[in-house]
Length: 254
Ligand SMILES: CC(=O)N[C@@H]([C@@H](O)[C@H](O)[C@H](O)CO)[C@@H](O)CC(=O)C(=O)O
Image (cartoon, rainbow, N blue to C red):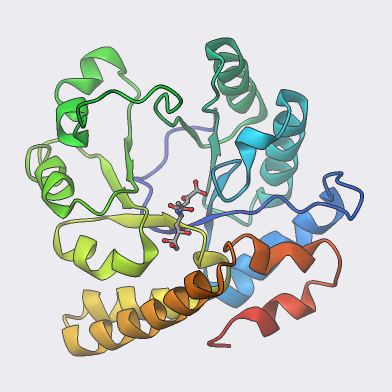
């Protein structure tokens, strides 16, 4: 992997995987996608092959190629490229993790097993307890639940560790910032990165009234999309079909 870097913080765009109309990965737009995120949205970290990128619907070979392309195109432009390597097969996951290291990704992320759910809720705070004894390279948590008590306890009980606490529910990010989130991973930072960065800046300068206005604005848009029944990645579907110039037009706040 690339040399150890500073803690992952700020916004991390969960990238979609651009496809052609024939169902093949459209590698040709990834370079432009990187430029768009950095220049138009002010987002310099990405999370590849996650839920938004539909990594679990891709073959291992496709996932490897997608990861390679993002790492290559993001070189000297992005701060951190995190590759999601979770899979239902442990061997696939291990292969993808090794591959991410070989190509120089900055980190990997792994979803917990999700097919057979335990009956009891497993709190993230319990998982973090002593985690570095088991995973010495553990860097942080992507928390995609709305249970802010659990999230707050994760932060509170790990103040001595330099973990990244990344929140994954974009419409509630402001509440998570109050509880100590150091950054966020999400689909909407693909097109509302600029707006969300304004919220982070307002929060940073303790202008909570402006931060709240930004959050409400973001919430209204996300709610609108959810009511339409459109997945956030579908908003991006014409990435592969149109030029990237049209992406800017998709942003409600451009
Ligand atoms: C369930 C889901 O897709 N959650 C999104 C959010 O960004 C979500 O789209 C957003 O909060 C709008 O509901 C992210 O947490 C997903 C994500 O980070 C990923 O693609 O791995």
